[in-house]
Length: 310
Image (cartoon, helix red, strand yellow):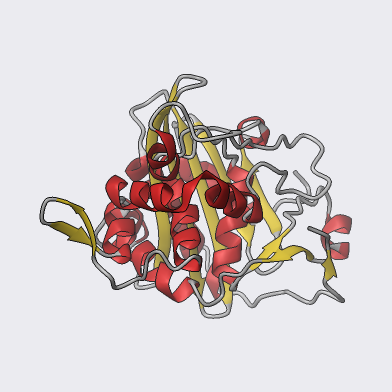
């Protein structure tokens, strides 16, 4: 693709290697998609989000004040856990509890607010939107919906847009995928909407960092081998519609004034899961670091931001 960043594409293709799946890399400060490996998979109508849905549940729970970052929630017996540990360890009971307490209408509201069920891209003709259920899933109800994503179909582009908003402080951009240098030169970031998460992000990030440092996404740090922090969330499950075993990892990294979002979805084939997907993302960051990608200055100079309607 003439509109892709070739350094980023080479890094992503090399990292994905023999796995069946897709890698999406984007600039969260503009919404520009830098590369998509395996577009056919990235553009299709979506897969069960598995445990990446816990990001949406956490933000909903924080905004509705049914959880706080440092408050230990009783799960079962004498087991208690706070948000940071629950995200890092991907604890199902913690996030199932949020779904049960908030109920379908509020979870559905926040899912739509964060971009689920609608296209994430601007004028990307091949893109299909994911979907949301009409009511609590028959299999496990709200507990399964907010711990495994039961009933939801998520696309890699939607998860990319979500992590971009978390990385940039709460702006949900339309993702733009330029097809030529001329389109790159004319690209102006387009705001879909501002999300009410700016004050919640500091409560979310320790859990996303913990996932990489000591939780389910440790392979990302093993692959990257750098002091630069990676923030991310894994997801592992079997998509009921396919059925296909899935491994998700949504992530972002800050390096000085340069930010980058990397989303990986692995679909069957070789044994896959969220931790394996996190290792692929870590290799993307490592490859780019070796190419001095993060040492290069940012080139963000939009003339204006054009807001879209909600």
